[in-house]
Amino acid sequence: MAKRVAFFLVLILLIQVVSVPPASGNVSFSDLVASSAVLAEKDTGTILYQYNMNARHPADGLTKVVTLLLAAYAVENDEISDNELITMTEAAWAGLDENSSTLEIEPGEEMTFIDLMYAAYVGNASEACNMLAIRIAGSIGAFVGMMNEQVREFGCTDTRFANAHGEFNSSQYTTAHDQYVIFREAMASALFAEVSGTFRHLTESIDETESRTISSSNSLINRNSRYFYRNCISGRDSSSYEGGYSLVAYAEEDGLSLISVILGSNVHMFEDESTEIRSFSETLRLFQWGYTQFSWRDILRTTDLLARVPVLHGSGADFVNARPDSPLTLLLENSIPIEEFERNITIYSDVEDDPLVAPISSGDILGEVTITRNGVEYGRRTLVANTEVRLSGVEYMRGQISEMLSTSTARNVIIVLVLLVLLYIALVVRYNIVRANRLRRIKNAKKDIIRERHQDFRD
Image (cartoon, rainbow, N blue to C red; front, side, top):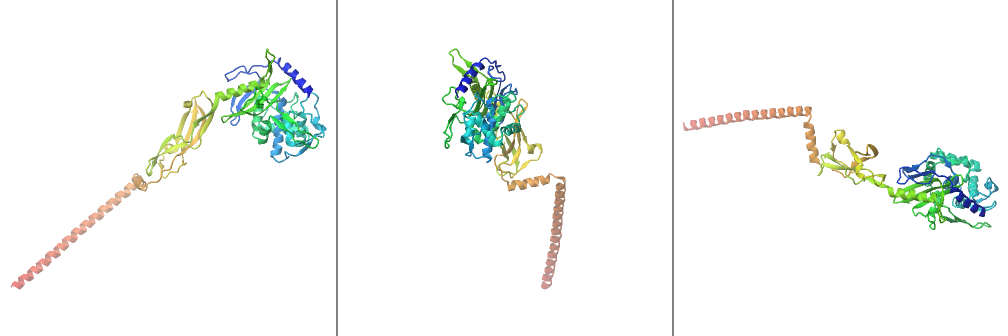
C-alpha cells in the first residue's frame, strides 16, 4: 500500500509538467484543461459541449466501467448470484506488480460476488477485476473479448480493451465520445448505478477473511471533499502517467441528466503548495455551465388550444378546439426565446375540403402541428379534439335536405314531384268542379220536379 501511495505522489508531480492543450468550443469559457471532453444529456444523447471528443486516449481506469457493467449484467440476468462466494486465485494476479492498484486480496481469500464488484470498482482493485473476469468468462482473455464485443454493440468505434482492470497498455484506448456512450448505457443498469454511486462500502466478513472498508477515489461523491458535488450520482475517475487525470461522471438536477467526460487533464500546484486535481474541477465547471445554460423548455402542452375547427350538425356547438395529443419539450439554451418557434398547423378537413361532421369524440384526430425554428424542424405532434360535440337531429335533417337539394338529380326529382303534385291538385280541382256542377244540376232538376208537382196540385 505504501508503494502505491508513493507512486501516486510522484505521479502528481510528473503530471504537472505535462502540456495539455486548452479546450475551445461553443461554451462561454475557452480554457478548459483537458485533452478531450464531452458534456451530453443522457436521455436524448444531445451533445452540449465537445472538445476533441473523437481523439483516441488511454483508457486507463475507465476500463473498470465496462468490467463492472458486465458483472452487473451477469447478476441481473441471473447468471451469477450476487451472494455467490468467490475464492481468489493466483490467476487473478497474473500480470500485476508492485505498482498495480490492488486491495491485496490474497489467493485463497473468499469474497461474495457483489463485494468483489465493490472491490473492483470502488476499491480500484485490479486483482478483483481479474477475478470477476475469470468467474464470468472462464478466463481474462475471454472476458476482454466480451468487453470489446459489448462496446461495439453500444456503437463505440474507437474503443479497445486489452485487460479488465485498466493498467496501462499501449493497445488499450478510448475516446471521450465513446466513454459518454458507454456510461450512458451503463447507467441503465440499476446494479451498476448502485455500485458506481457508492463512496464507502463494508465487505462481508467470511470465516477467516476479515471485512474491508472500501472507499472510492471519486471526490465528486465524497462529502468531505472540496470537489463534492451534491448533484453527482455516479462516476469513475482515473489517473496514470501516460493518460493523465480523467473522469466520467453523471449528475441530475431539475429533471436534467448530464454526463461529463474529461480525458487527459492534470494536477495544478499553487504557490502555497496546495494542489488542484483538474479532472474534478473541470468536471464541476462543465456541470455548472450545463445546468446554468440549458434546461427543458415546454414548446407545446396538451392544454394548448391551437385551432378552432368548424363542425357541421353539432348540438350546441359549431366548432371544436384542436390540441396536441402529447407535449413537446426540448432541451434548449436558456437564452433562446420560445417565441422563435413557429407552429405550422394543418387541419385535415381543410386540406381534404371535407367538412367535419358531428358527432365528434374527445381525442378524435383533426390534424397535425409542426414546430420549426429558423427553417429547422424540432418536432411534430398530432392534433386531436379537445371536447366532444354531439349530433343535433334537427341540424342533421336540415343538412341532409340541403345536401340533397344541392345535386342536379335531386332538383330534377323534386321538380317532377312538384309537377305531379300540381297535376294532382289540378285533377282534384277539376274533379271537384265537375262534381259540383253535376250536383247543382241534380239539385236544380229536383227543384223543377217539385215545382211541377205543386202546380199540378193547385190545378
